[in-house]
Length: 127
Image 1 (cartoon, rainbow, N blue to C red):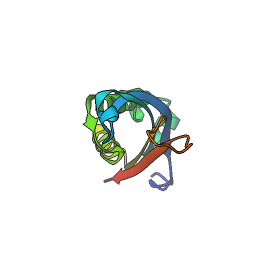
Image 2 (image 1 turned 180 degrees about the vertical axis):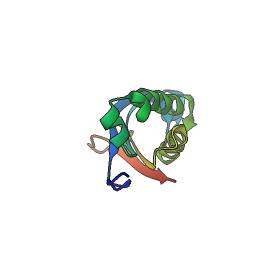
Image 3 (image 1 turned 30 degrees about the vertical axis):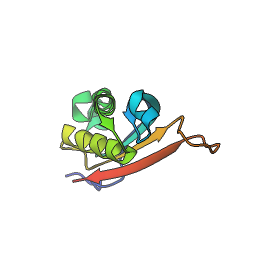
Image 4 (image 1 turned 60 degrees about the vertical axis):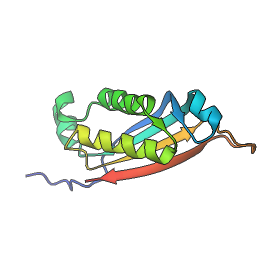
């Protein structure tokens, strides 16, 4: 019997996936891709993988990154909200062991006159 609480807060964290995407409502954002960064948090139990030291017992983060990049770069989104929600849903569908996914996307060069480092949206999707 497993004495660990399955919702113990185990997570896989992926930070700073850089992509060039079409996202935004301004004409300049619709005409050319712009840089964004994506962070992902996958809540899932990791004990089996930790004990066995076996990749097949966990979610392969290379697969998650490839999927997130594909969804982000193949889409043509008006809103960052739509981009993060679609990435989250696709990642959640990738592996039944994932309890929830949080996706953050940040425009690293937002088209605003203010001096701001990034603008972004965070979305969490669970089962």
